[in-house]
Length: 496
Image (cartoon, rainbow, N blue to C red):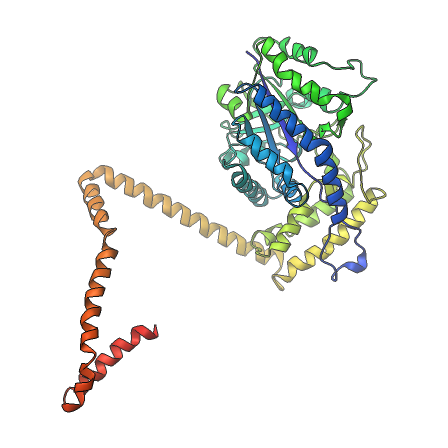
């Protein structure tokens, strides 16, 4: 039986405002609040809410059968919290059905995985914390920004404890292989890779409403029939796209939601089921490793990172931003850290691209790539001056040495803790009687505080009775010295 793994990404651009050179040092707020509220309100009304309502209806009509997965960027969630909280409430409602899985991704929707391992780790963990806070479960499958993946990134994700990762089923990587199998990272065999079916995904997200497309109009039964025609040995068809495909890229007037609502029934009729990414990882074994030495993504024809780092302007802005990454790892200023998240977002670099593309890029307030670069660099100049002001005259080399020392000390402490735990376990095996004695010793220790309270109460009682003795003390001269000692002892505890 074949399986469909359906996944949607939810991310919202944080629009930067027009920032002049003369604003540097005087204005530390970089965002166009009006543009942010306007864009996310429009998308929520025309895409997110109608799409989520349709998916909820599909789940209720197909209990235990239809399943779907989502991932959200942290910066996108912050925008939803401000301007469209109903979207997050709806996602929580979907989560309660038990047929939805939430994946993790970098909080900033940035490119830190390509340049700074520690920043990448912090980004992922911060997002996982937020997902757990909202939906009650920590993700076990990871999805990088725009499905960016390399062998090194896979190894790092595996070291963080994730069991699976989503990426692109690009031809230049797969060669003769099919994306309809589960693979594993070549540097970390325990990390399973789920590869997006490019054609099946783009038929919906890019071509569904294209009247010049040879398969227009696309119907649910013929779409599922094509999946059913795949060889019997092929296991899973991964259909990954942005949620804005439903309502924005493909308008609601195209009947895109009606198409989706028909998919579960058509799949049942031909013996195809649905599964979440974690279920796919558990259900299917890897058929082999996938070597991806160079960066891979789901953007443009090249399926690489050239849309963000393809020209000199983009690389200069990217390298300058991450030149202060190590300083931000030890920063505690909430406003500064929030700006750090927003400035990392990959959209800021894509606005600077000079590549010809089949996909329209809405540059917002920018007239072109150079205008986007100039505005971003002005903001970055102010941001970096604020970061450097936190650490006075410490240069990068000195700061790096400090961070290395702190990191090494932390690792040594972790190793010592593990060694102590190992030796304690070994000791308990060699001397079980001693372990039992230690357990007996620990049991009454919990009651000890109560016994101390009783003793203290008993001691306090006679002290109150002895207080009148101070009045009798003047009758005899010899007891005066002890009386002073008693006074000092009773006075000290009150002073503390």
